[in-house]
Length: 364
Image (cartoon, rainbow, N blue to C red; front, top):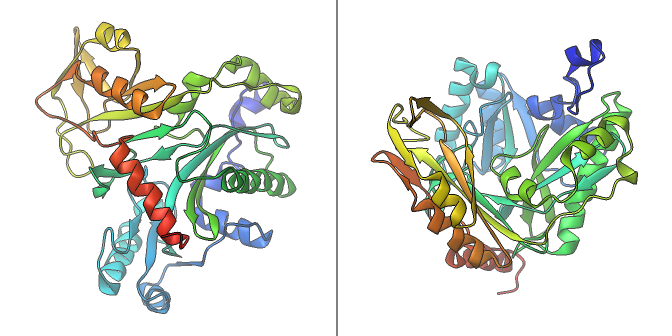
């Protein structure tokens, strides 16, 4: 973005300085603390494993360990999910520092918070923030939230713009945090223009900030952008020109379910170079949308790489119908070495989310 601006080329994206809200997790946490924004959690950054150990022990090992820089959604490890005790956490801290995972010999340690994650994306012109429907991503590779973290195996959204466990008040609190982030970035001379999203953990005390990202979410953007009725180019112009407050932005009130097709071994050791047969016409006839991600095409055939291959999105009035459309469309994707997390968007998994939040709120 910075280089484009130097050449007077209009672009709807944050500058390098504003994008630091994503690229430097420590800076993001410091910014929230400096300006007293809501949704904060306990955190500290370390370059010394021995000092990190003291903080981990203070939190009884209930921590999330994050490289400072970018790791494609695969560098975060959380107590109970990825390691079982203090020593395991310290071992990963040493690995991050010694191997410069994320690009720096530094690690961010945060308190582990319990709840349900949700994504809130928005358009920003630096002063006005227009939120999009809430989405829930599924980072874990295997059904029922098991296995290693990935870049995201799929996601869903609901026709009312909320989620089955997320109230309007809680959604609005997330929006308020995003608006205040954009406001303080402007105060710090880092005016933020373009898509932005917050990854939140909904707790019994409301939304807490997990991370802020300087872009759309993947796969979450595939849930909401197909519902956009307003011309996207006009929205981009409004963001760049600072006229977003005068733009009416509309979405179709539909539910969506997105599921990724990934190479076998994804998140551990992907099997690249394996053929995938995709019947595109049949997918479209099922009423679904198809998005290619990371694949190679040789002649007329599609082959896996080490990353996610393609996504299929079902859209309908009801969430259950959208999930059914997605599953029918996925039957037209074949390969001996592919994997799909089929439980995303299912009634069983969503009910688990609802009951989890009810328990945390003391409702059951």
